[in-house]
Image 1 (cartoon, rainbow, N blue to C red):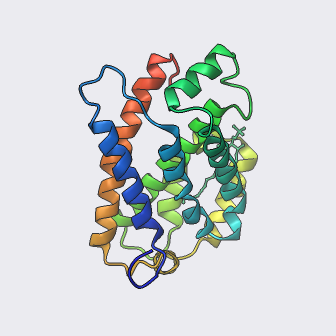
Image 2: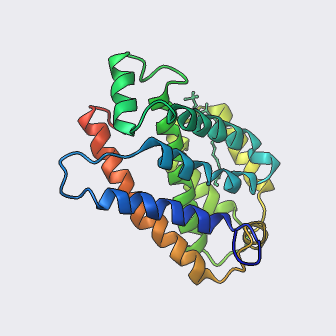
Image 3: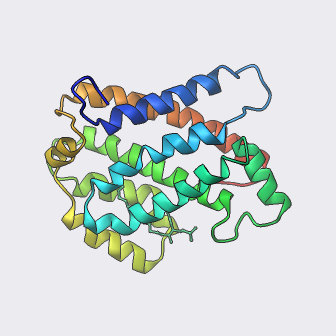
Length: 209
Ligand SMILES: CCCCCCCCCCCCC/C=C/[C@@H](O)[C@H](COP(=O)(O)O)NC(C)=O
């Protein structure tokens, strides 16, 4: 909450992922990077308001994302790191099972990628409509993994998206894109960095993302 008591979700997200990146970077020397589940799942929970800002058309996406993040937050009460969580799912041979922690992590990671690509597209477009940026982001991140029905629902939802100005207003951002650029930088650098480490982790655990 900033000094004027205004909720600014984007700033909270960038701060949380910045802290995670710092903890990752402080382990540079180590062979294996430990990614703590509690701060990671908390940072992911700070992204939920972004889905909410997309309105009723994406309620199903918000509910799916929030349910999966809640599962990771709950799991973080008994399991310390992402590695331990995934290794346990492998040992229990339930990684690909619907609702497994590792499968939920993969879906949440895609949600984060969707947000990263979406803001990238928003910054790259002069247009006040979010339809193209969101369609591009969805096409890049999610569409390859979704069936016909979900793709159709998302395509229909794209017509009910708020405008860029409305989204920034909902996020209490006054559109000074340099602030957004800063946030993007965090997303770009740190999320990508975390993602690389996660990718490395998945590879170690023989799971191709
Ligand atoms: C803030 C930016 C977001 C912009 C638009 C979001 C569009 C994202 C659409 C996601 C739709 C999710 C609907 C749920 C599908 C589930 O079947 C699927 C698989 O979940 P499962 O592993 O079977 O529980 N979940 C995901 C995230 O792909």
